[in-house]
Image 1 (cartoon, helix red, strand yellow):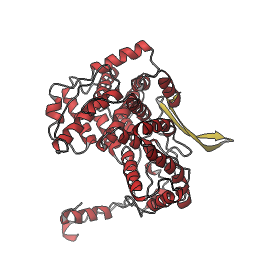
Image 2: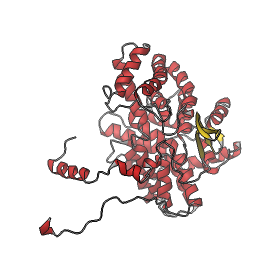
Image 3: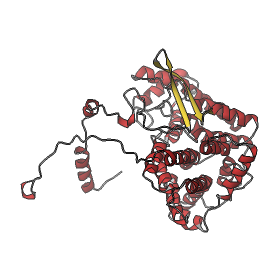
Length: 449
């Protein structure tokens, strides 16, 4: 990036005068990132929506364990096993569970799906006037703009009563797939990457996962396995505790009493960040780099040596990170990655990409060993769900511009549940303390500076 020399001068001054001595954080016992030195999060709230477990008490001590994820008290693995056993799509059922707190009966689920579809149509001319005009190069920004614009089409946008907020949340959940996919089509056509612009209306007979593929592809076709794997991806990304950055953002912004559209747009801004929602793109790009630079994908030593080069900032993006390995909470294993992996394997076989899957599998095995050898760690590392989700999206032919929006299409279910929970229970604006460490100074007159 080339900056004007004047702004660079001021930027240098800004950086220099905003640096805080890192030792002050230790001296004042400040938990940077709301996490202690061992990575344990500061308790800032209570929730019944989901639970993330990475440690268990044994003889009074916290001992790392295999990761566990619960939605409203149900293990996510059990939810997915039940859905697969019945050969049905489950994302809508999970939305119901997260928001209403109970698994639906068949009748309740049927009525809920009808309600979601009734909320799906966008306002008249919204695609033409909002999405197609001034299309964004970033689909998350396009999504956020669409969300904020929908405020203007709402007859009662600022009412924070639960019935109204529930209606707004369900409308946004229903519309997110269209906002994301249509936003991509507008960008693709506007940048001349495609000579065609097409709009497929969502079908009431199709699940969310099926509709995404139906709307995205010009022929609207997909295999049952493709849609099932995408459905599983949506379920696994739908919620992950109240402490993840975008969900905590939802709590913070909702606690101020603001409208639903502003709260969800703020969550989108958080998820857009590469440290949060953009990790799967980094994994996909990293794997492309590895495939180009490692001659034998089955050679453990060659793969391990190249991972070490990535870690030493000598390869890929020179950031020193093996993307998709490690998580802020999990150490022994990420339950989402564990569940997802078998579906990824099946899809790779359908797509004729078993060699690529085997490379992912080998990196998953070797990366923790390389990291443990090269870095001092306070906890173990393992593959996280992003390690495989990017590979899945590539196999599905999803454009990289939609990787993070797909995450948002799933996670708005959790955001909505947490927004409602915050409005029902909190009552106070969230305002943590910051300690000022700038010494007080006397004013200096202009002619004496």
